[in-house]
Length: 155
Ligand SMILES: [Cu+2]
Image (cartoon, rainbow, N blue to C red):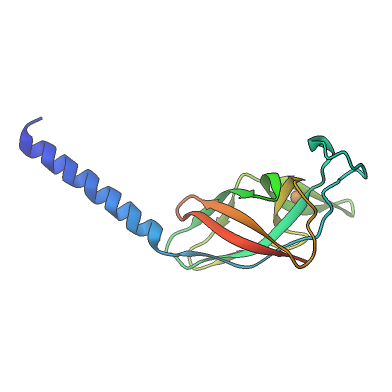
C-alpha cells in the first residue's frame, strides 16, 4: 500500500468512527413512565437470602424511538437484581404464563409499551425488597442507541 492509499484509508476509518459517534449522541431512544412492581426479596418464604431462594421482580417502561430506523432492545441490567431478562406474558388455557424473548424491536417513529400482562423486564433474584416509593436504577442496551439508563419508581 502506498502512502496516499494509506492516508485515504485512515481518513475513511476516521470518518466512519466519527459518524458512528454522532449517531450515538443523538437521543433517539427515550424511556418514559418507568416503574417497578413491589416485591419481597425472599421468594419462597425463607429468610436465608441464598441466591436460589430469592424472589423476582418486574420493571415496565415505554420505549419511544424518535429515530429514522428500527432499534432493538437486546439486554437489560439493574442494581436491584442479579440478572435481567426480556420477557413476554401470554395466556394459555386461562393461565398467565411468561417466557424470555431474545429482543424487543422498536420501529422507527414508534414505541413499545411494556405493561403487566405483556412485555416486561424480569428482575431475577432480587438483592433487596422493592418497597413502594423508592426508586431502582435499570439500564437497557439497544443495538443502535447503546445503553440507556432509567430510574423506575416502585409501586
Ligand atoms: Cu417475566
